[in-house]
Amino acid sequence: MSGLNGQGAGGGVTSSRNGHDDHDPGPSDAGTEPDARFTLANERTFLAWNRTALALVVAGLGIVQLLPPFPGVPWGRHVLGVPLIVLGAAVSVVAYLEWQRNQAALRHSAPLPRSVLPQILAGTITGIAVLAAVVLLVSAVR
Amino acid sequence: MLPDDPEDLDPGLARERTLLAWARTGIAFAAVGAAMLRRQPVAGLIVLAITPVIWVLGRVASQQIGSKPHSRQLLLITVIVTLVAVLAVVVALVGHAPGGLRELLPRLG
Image 1: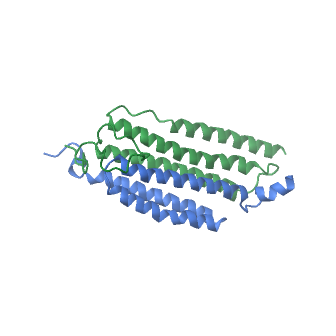
Image 2: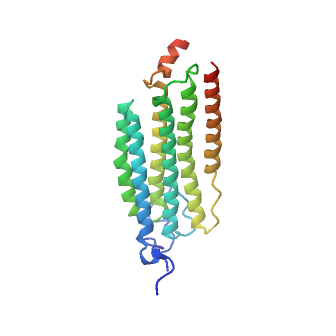
Image 3: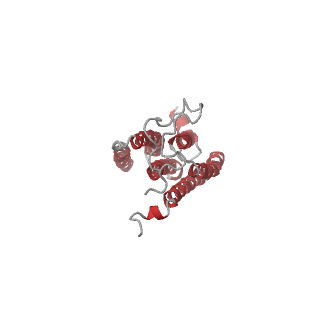
């Protein structure tokens, strides 16, 4: 027995509840409303990615605003900090798109699509780490 | 006989975990606001003011069932995080950090 399944939706499709949802950007009404626990888990994943996005924003801001300038590399903090902030925005947008895709898959009892966020995050952070090493080296040489 | 899944005994746990996730997200906004407050009080206060909005969004979302109503709230979170990131880029580029671009650009020009 599933305690939350179908609460408020009668276990059925929530389409045509009213006439105002036609242009809603949310997942399609196709399929059936999944077990609420799955919907809530999907939502928590979205929120977790957004906290990661905020952490990236605050890290980028901290690099630019709080670190002392690199000697001989006056642009160093911006080169490291701004991409982190931009990555934060990108993570938030992609997290929403993935939440939509996951919800649509849940509604159709289909396998969940593979997330690209770990690759985006790992790739960008690796790039920024390499950049940080370059900035430090240039700073040391000058 | 006890069910295998403890949530069958208390299905509210999933909802409670989600509510806590919303609270953590609100706290994350407060942390970003506090970090901005030091150098950019106006931007920091704007982000701090978002914290109660996130809290209320979480409360509202926890009372709704289904994908569609949640879609609007989650889209709003995405828009807010993106705007905060834009604000952060502006603060990073034109802020008053020592040795920042504001000091740097006239020297370059």
